[in-house]
Amino acid sequence: MDVKARQERPGGAVVALASDHAGVEACLALAAALREAGHEVLHLGPAKPDPVDYPDFAARVARAVASGQAACGVLICGTGIGMGMAANRFRGVRAAVAHDEYTARMSREHNDANVLCLGSRVVPAARVAEIVRLWLATPFLGGRHAGRVAKIDACHEPEAGKGA
Ligand code: RB5
Image (cartoon, rainbow, N blue to C red):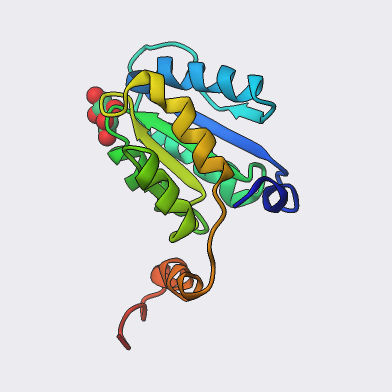
């Protein structure tokens, strides 16, 4: 989704961010970097590194994206894995765990990911903002990928995948 496409959706170009305690420092730094770069940021917590449960914060961002309050979101925990598992339970959310520029870019081009999950213990702190900026600027390629993404979204249905 490029910036123009995001602006045409409810939630405009708003990027929702959240983390758990393992990702709080990286998430606050990311919020500052995105604001500095001109993005509208909705930071959904936490503000301090006290222990919290990552599904609670994944749910905040997933709900913001699913409702259109935000166009997309970024979640940071220790690995990105738990955030991704939780966020993908929400209809309309396609959360991708990425480890680098390549996986972040592919999650947009092929999978139309609308939530990016990063691991603060996996991705070097100095690369987080750059990976997220690349992810935000990368459009979905559509074409042959569009039908596959539609099938991801249809996975909530009990008959999903039976005809394959
Ligand atoms: C917290 O220790 C850790 O489990 C969490 O940040 C995340 O990596 C879970 O997937």
